[in-house]
Image (cartoon, rainbow, N blue to C red; front, side, top):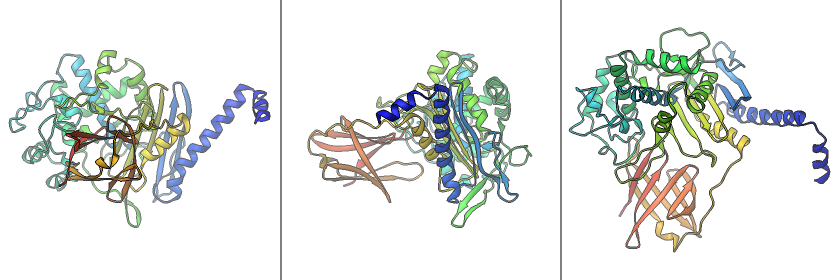
Length: 451
């Protein structure tokens, strides 16, 4: 070992950095190529940039299967980014707040007076962090009937307002596309222009994103990848979808280069908004019970691989995407797939982040008392359907079981356990567990023991 260290000391620093860079690029190639070789992903584009240092920008697999077109190597392929759109919507709101044109604490009906809330006060703030309580339209069966049809957006408003609400504003947090749909309409009302024009003029152009645009299911765009869904046979043509509906929740298109430029402009400059507005954009708010959520105005703030991160994934018919930004390292990890299938880009993005930064595991703290008191079945609200979690304790090990998924939980103190970035927080009363809070960043639900 000492001989190896001594030999490395003789290698010029520039050559040593080059060797390390080549090893890292080979590792990234392996991570991204694996699901493509397994037939789970058609094609991918990846950008990994730290500060001014581009570690890798590359295309993999096919941009189009039918014509056997390879994904462009230079990161110039265009993808639909789905819910990565939400951070752009959040930034647009913060710009309008900065200009004094709206307030985060305004009731949505101030701008959408015909929208019925059943007497509830729903602020813009509650819309932006998924705590409004209205049902997401992607989880409403009646809405799915016209996803492929370019109807008036008022059609969706009527569906949303007529569906029973999941909870009262601020009581819980369930990921919600309806909320961002409404925010898009508010932006148009306040800015006096279509959402698509606003994001181009005030976000894309200012951030330096030449290929970013509002998606279209009909327009021809040079460089756009073909999107593929998945069934039991493998990749299939993506299912039809009108971009009337993803809208401010998920209708933007761009390249991985565009998204790196966005990360730089948003997180490392004042090109888009003041420093004070940026701090507000990434500041998570609290639920009614005072619990601070892990999501703020279009961005999740939960750690990735144990490192502080601002991030968001996206999924839309034919494409899946992930955007990780690590502020302490000024590191962007962007992974786009032109496949909505069994392997997601979040897995690859996190693996790449671990290859660069390593993984910080939570420090385990001994459980005070008998851990078997956490054992039981807990049930509560979920995204569109109820959720149920079984907590099992074996030889002091605490595990959470949901369906076929089993997750080991690490106790970090105060009856709080971690599994990845998800918190499991048990509340006790009179020596008995009375609830389990599951905090996954964009979802925060309190489950009760089943009798």
